Length: 117
Length: 112
Image (cartoon, rainbow over all chains, first blue to last red; front, top):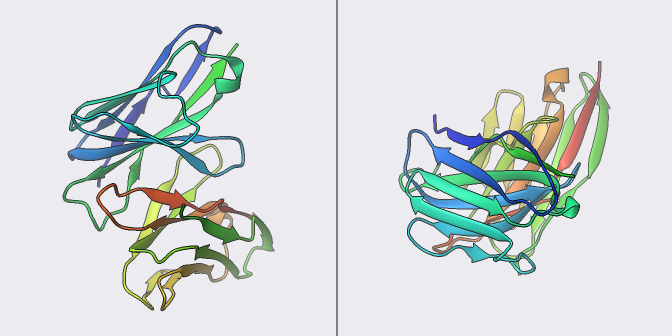
């Protein structure tokens, strides 16, 4: 089945620093990748949608200059949390949809738990 | 924008009891998907429903898509402790952006 590899799984960083999270589709071409944020015991909040080779589309209320998304290839998308603050601490998850996987749902990465101290 | 409501938010059952979670969309959907997230884990795709009135089964799990393609349900028969987790529905309104709108999820706990 389709696999999306996300890393790091956990990261602790200091306030003011930047953190990059990577998502790779291992056995399919991810034409579209989605980045979510999830608070404890809460649902998934879509942050942005990225299509390979084009600028990401951010959801309302998500700062595009703070959460930089790059989808440079069909197998890799990155989310960079810039100038992190403690309130950015959360669980970040990517998901990918492949061109030929219309009936297979979306494959999620294993998530990254970010703690900003 | 599109909204997907899911109830109940929590459900605690005794092992062997049945469980149902319901989703209702504010708009007609192209398809609806169901995911399961174990505690500490990430969402895992369970199934996708596309056709009006569709019913699909996976062992003890039964998924239904309403005739109007706006509501859906997941029913688990004779729950087991391995069923513990949060079940999310996610509506796809169609279009070229393939964006899913997730319900808030139902956290199922099972008492052995």
